[in-house]
Length: 302
Image (cartoon, rainbow, N blue to C red; front, side, top):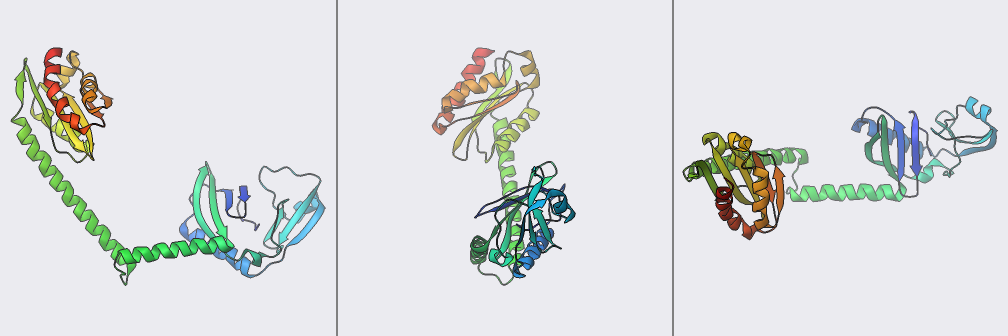
């Protein structure tokens, strides 16, 4: 194993993967990773032979500049492994190649944090490294084909990203228009129920956030409101119960209690706060029953 010019925290090597942990407090940049690869591959191409010395007194080994593995314990006599005395001199009891050229090729596949001040590099060598590079090139080919084999790949990707962002913004605008239209229509359907304002309705929403926004918007426009909304979102039923703050503080109605009772109709459950709660379920067909049940349940409670 080749040495490193950082404090080594720990390492693990097998026939398929090299995993190297070391003390470092910031992410290793892509440029630094490329520099490491270039340095290692340069040493591989130099075909540096292994120099092994056994039963070396520990003091002599340290004078040679041998690097010890962090946390390892050593006896009075050690094994010293050298790949060029000016590059890698280590105390090590593991297996080593006879010549760095036997490694063939070195490729880093990942860099990550594994603890406070500890980074990890994972890499492959020889046939595994070639296979990794082939996989990456095949993936690149597939990306090019998916984009119509553009002459300038990055320019094409930037254009695709801009188009997607514009379409997403347009969809968000359409969704907001739909919510505004529904809010106006729903506000007209609010009715009196035992001295409260009440509405239970099934609506169109593309996300739980949209359903929540619609509920909050309606509460802002109508004081003393008890609101139950249901929607099918991504093929699944969702319910939202919103109460006016004063109604929730009075304590006779509780949004969480209401939504859990209604959620039985959609084979689900939920929770939240006294003034706002949501529930999801499995039975989309039960949304209508949940909405229909809401009025009787609220009337009975108050």
